[in-house]
Image (cartoon, rainbow, N blue to C red; front, side, top):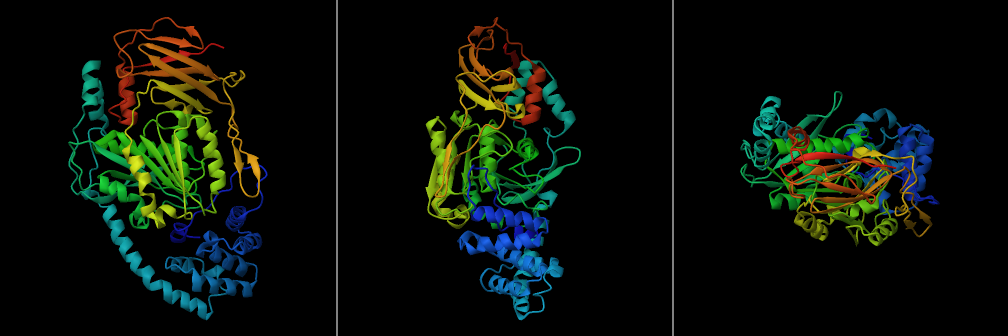
Length: 552
């Protein structure tokens, strides 16, 4: 299926729940996989089982189109014609004109029918009109004269002067009070930036510059992660995302916030690819280099797969954000453990699920949510009437969730942190980071595995959220004493901030009951410059980084 059609549907994933019975979601996943493998016989078999369930969410043009092609390719012409009539009469969308042209060799068994002529007549005029509008839209978002493209924070020589000239105190104050931002040529517009992530990857992302923006004032940032990312062959930059997903932007536009809309594709998305998460953080830092972003009011939300991306950030990399919101999603990480207790820190996570969502069963989500509530998670989940498209189709009913999200202001200087990870790339939360794991010794007695019971009408089973050995750290700051207990940790780093400790006095660590010698704080200009260069965060400016080894 091609770019326009793919943007319309959620490509559901199968969750690893032990004892899971065959269901519509399973049929959908198998049909999708078979179709991509060009195993049309199996694709037809599973698609027919899926359609036979009668579930409304799956009675759509994507699945009927898949059935038509699969039937044509297996020489079941009568079935193909029947499914094609159903598609054209009940589920036709103008964007399918593109697919009809691209897949013409796969559709020969229906392309000579009157129904085909009807489909072309119904789709071509609207398709052509939208294409014309999209070309104008694309020309607008790629017009580099209407936006900012350079700044002192993006120029290596100018940035080197900012972080290098003068003693530590002078550099610290210069960075903390940095306010040399330019006025954009045009306000209240979407613009497309591209940023290089590594030697082989450049990613596009959309930015909306608010009409209220003034470069002398700190402005909040709203990051939204799209759904339906698993099967996209390319970044969907030419589709009019602001139009398609307008309801999820309304609150941000009203609040005068910047909007960051990252793009994804099947080999770079927020289910299975760590680089996709790094790309988002790089995009945030890039945006902070050009515009006066309020570091303590950066909010992250997402729908479906995008909601799962928001959940991943909440449990693995929360430092940049003030709060998180996910719509019609499943609360699990697919590339790491799912450390639910990481939600017990001071970043709230809000979720909204639909009672009639057949992609992500409410009963399963609710089982995990209730388990997390029992272990102290800072997580509020709501169940509303509706289906998977709830935030797009019933925007008025979910506005309260945006209110909660936008009300939060980040406080990265809470005196207590509990953090857990199976990957040191996800080892940091605010002022504390696990920098080396100990996977040899047994977990401490106070560390418990996560085994929430996931219930459905069909089965009851336990989800294994602990597939990898993990490191856990708990830390509390009182004056200049840091009390720490660890499990599975060989080394951690304490980021020294004047908001947390008296930097004129030494630090004492009490690690697993053993006190270290007092360690004086040395003002570290290199650590300060590196932190600012990476994050462009004018709040999280460390005076020093203290690395602490943990004895076995």
